[in-house]
Length: 71
Figure 1 (tube, helix red, strand yellow):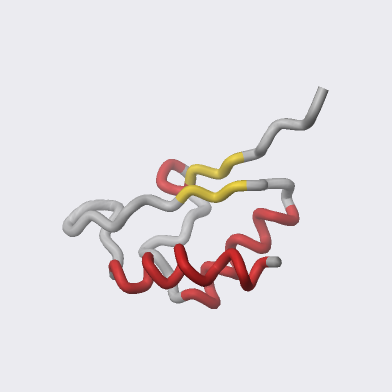
Figure 2: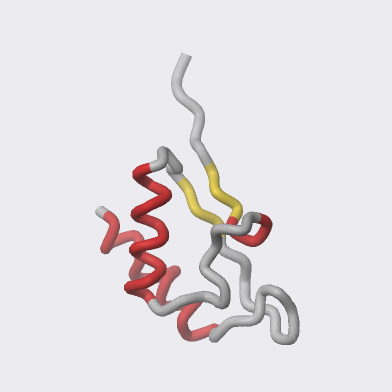
């Protein structure tokens, strides 16, 4: 039997990047959770005037660049 992925769904936990933080802060956040055994981190698409409000440009930067900084 192979291991299962451990997924952190950030929108529903108290420990989440809120509002979506700049790339370096997110990489630090993701690195801490990788050390805890998480293999995937899910972040919510920014929705204005909600708990998920964030800068879409920061979201896109995280989506495009964060994984490379974690390797």
